[in-house]
Length: 196
Image (cartoon, rainbow, N blue to C red; front, side, top):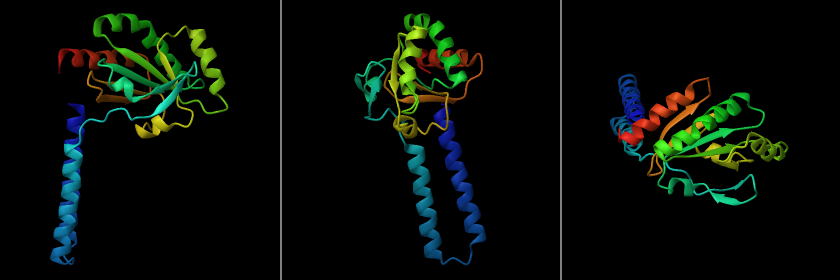
């Protein structure tokens, strides 16, 4: 519903722009104006008609050096949480620790999986595995050293959380972290399980 509302808002915004341009650009020849309006209308319709985004076909290493196709998480048939983080990002580490405390409960209730994606660069990537091992995190942790996945998903900064439904479609994203955001995330998960 959130994506639908956002896309509808974007369509309405484009319509307002078109309307303003048509009112103020009366000197444009009618054929150019029609062409301009049609172009923007098609752009608005394509924005509105887009399917929900899925994870890209992109291969990253996990902390153990195994190559993983990120798109496989979309095809798992499970609700999936993707959490972008880095060893230097205190809010990121706090978010993952808090989710980790709830994870066993969430797995049994909702049948979901958690994937952490480290955005540590080549200089810091060697710190990721020792940190993950020290936290005793058992969920998958991928290394996005060049930030390819982060860029593909238009993550502005970290922490950045992505929620996928069982069909692998992105249904919710959240940037930043404050204490308690994990409970908001759980509400989104409950709605997915309920079919809303």
